[in-house]
Amino acid sequence: MPLSADTEIARVLERTRTIAVVGASHKPERPSYRVMAFLLRQGYQVFPVNPGLAGRQLLGCEVYPVLASIPVAIDMVDVFRQSRYLADLVGEAIAAGARTLWTQLGVVDTEAAATAERAGLEVVMDRCPAIEFPRLQAAGLLPH
View 1: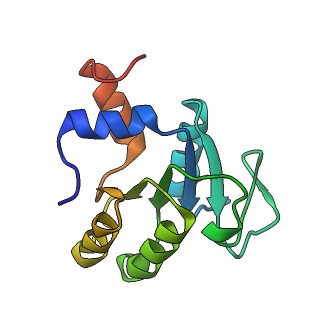
View 2: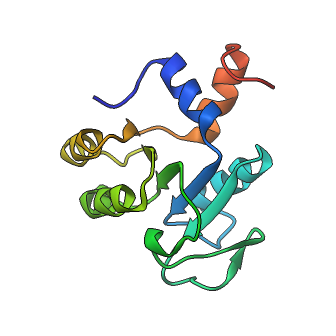
């Protein structure tokens, strides 16, 4: 079962240092761009993943074509792709050694989540860290 308790989600956000944003966009009006900017402001090291933008800079970060091309260990994979791509992304996240699979609002695939969990990943599904972080700060579960 994906994590749903506030304390569990706060723990994930607190221990995470590196985040791959899969489906990152260079368009400021897109949610993935705004969330990536938010994550950077919170002090996370962010690695945008988008094969169409690979090699370019996005918010000062190099864009990678796939998870496997990121040169450091990734704590969290934050998915902005459609649900139908999640099963393949879970395999990539497992291979990359990620600790957490986080899927954005509307990105739901319970079978893919179960596969990730069986491989030892924690899963946060159908939530946005840019919403959860300030909410959990306000609740006193994350530092300001």
